[in-house]
Length: 429
Ligand code: UGA
Image (cartoon, helix red, strand yellow):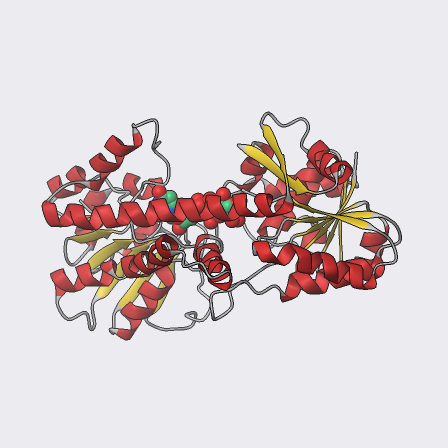
C-alpha cells in the first residue's frame, strides 16, 4: 500500500484522499484552511457528498487518513504527492494557476528524497512544463511528474471514483506511471497510459464535449418550441442511436457547476494562446449563458410586469445531490428576479442559503417544499430533483395564486399538470 499526500481538500482532493484511504493506502490530506481542517478532523466533510462522511470517519478511526496544514511534514512522510488545489476562472476566462504553482514550489523545497508528483487539478495543457520547472527550481532530489485527471461528478463523486469508466495516467517515466496505475489495479476498467499532454487533453476534451452536447440539445430545444415539437421525444429518439447514446442530452436552463463553465472557457483561452480559434467551444459558452435567460422571458410572457409578483422556486444547486451553487443558473435568475421586484420563496433539499443574496428580504428559504407555494404567481423548477415530480400538485394548486409552472429542467410530468389545470412551460416542449 502506498503513502499518499493529497494537497487541497476540495471536491477532487477530499474524495480522492478518502477513497485512496478506503482502498487501504496511508493518506495525509493537506489544506491551509484551519476551519476546514478542524471540521475534517472531527470526521465531517465541509461540503455534502453522498457516502463521504462515512469513509472519512472510518478512515480516521483506522488511522488511514489524517488532516494537517503542515505541508513540509506531509511531503517528507509520503512518496506519491497529489496536487488537487483549485484552478479557478480568472476574469479573462483563463485558469488561475497561482495555487498550483505555489504548491509546486513548496513540494520542490520540502522534498527529502525522490517523489512522484501527480497533477489531479485540471490545468491548461501548456502548464505541465512550467510546473515541472517550478518544482525543479528548489528541488535537491529528482522527481517525476504524472498527470492523473479525475472524472468524478458531484453528487455521485464517491461512486464515480470507485467505479470509473476509465483511469488515465500520463507520464514520461515508466516507473512513475506504473506506481500511479498500480493504485487503481483492482478497478474493473481500462487504464490508459499515455504522455502528460494527452492525459490533460482527455480531461478537457471530455468535459468540453459534454458541455457541447448540452448546449447543442438546448439549441435543438429552442427550435422545438418554435416548431411545436417536444425535446423529450427528440432527445429520446436521438439517444437511442447507439452512435449517439442517451446521456447529456437533457435540455434545460444550461449547465452550471465548477467544471463545465470554467473548463470550456479555459480551453478556448489555451487555444487562442496557440493561435487557434476554437469556434464551437466559444459558441457553447454563449449558448449556455443565453439559455439561463429563458426563465424570466417565459415569466414575463405570462405575467407581464414582474414587480411585486410572488415566485415559488424549487431547486437552487447546479445539480441534485450537492450543496454547490457555483455557476448555478439559479443564482443569476434569482438576482434578476429580485431586481425586477419579485418576492421569492425557495426550497432546495440541501441548500438553504446563497452567499451574497442572504439577508435579502426578497428571498426566503423554506425547509419544506410545500412552504413555497402560498399565494405564488408562478412556480419555477431550477434543479432536476426527481422528487419534485412526486409532490401533490392538487395541494400546490390550492396554495398558489395563479396556475403557471416554468420547469427549467423538464423534470415534471407535463400531461399530469396540464390535466390538473396548470399552465405548463418546460424547455423545448
Ligand atoms: C463534470 C463532469 O461530468 C465530470 O466527469 C468531471 O470530472 C467534473 O465535471 C469535473 O471536471 O470535476 P459535474 O460538474 O459535477 O461533473 O456535473 P455534471 O453531472 O457533469 O453536470 C454539469 C451540469 O450540466 C449541471 O448543471 C447539470 O444540470 C447539467 N446537465 C447535465 C444538463 O443540463 N443536461 C444534461 O443532460 C446533463
